[in-house]
Amino acid sequence: LYVYGSAGILRGALAFIFMQNPSAASIQYTHMPMDTLADVRTRLRYGEHELESLASTAEIARILDGTLSIATGLAVVPVYLGPNNFSLTSPFDYFVLIGAAVSVVTGSITLFTNTEAERRWGAYRELRDRLVASEQGAEDEAQLEAAREELRAFNQARFDQVMPQVGATTEGAFVGVSGVF
Image 1: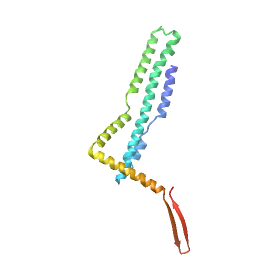
Image 2: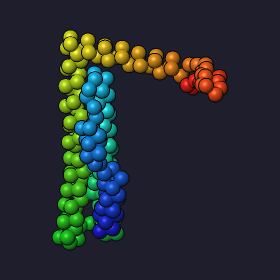
Image 3: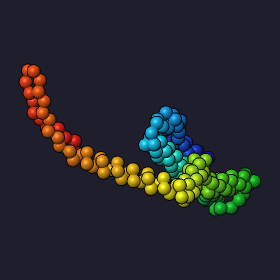
Image 4: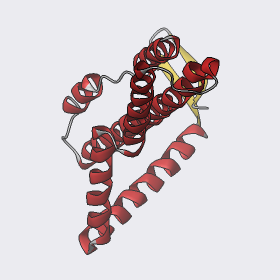
């Protein structure tokens, strides 16, 4: 009972740590503008990033949960049967072993079964890769990469600017320098 209780507490802590609420990202994604091609691309990249992040977090939680179930099932055997020199002396011993076996089997299933978030990310990647492999998709991807490079060049050039400032009013004048660093 101590082993299963400890594992239950740890499983609860893991669920709390890896708790996912995709509604905030979904609301932000839904409210992102789609007025220009740049807006659409920004929205698409944001959606991709959030979908991948959800899948990655779900994968880590799945692996930890499955491993914990397997470890719990395996740990019960020596903890329970060790004091009895690993001999089965009562019918209750069989129920404990069956419970441990169930824990190992369910942990294995959890470990090797993708979550819904992982399946959605995989389906999206498949669709994206098929679209990029097409002639139109490759052209769109090339245009997108060119736009990224143009934006990087613009941002670098913008940060290296120093501009003189001169102004006059009826009461005086000023001279200054401004720049973006």
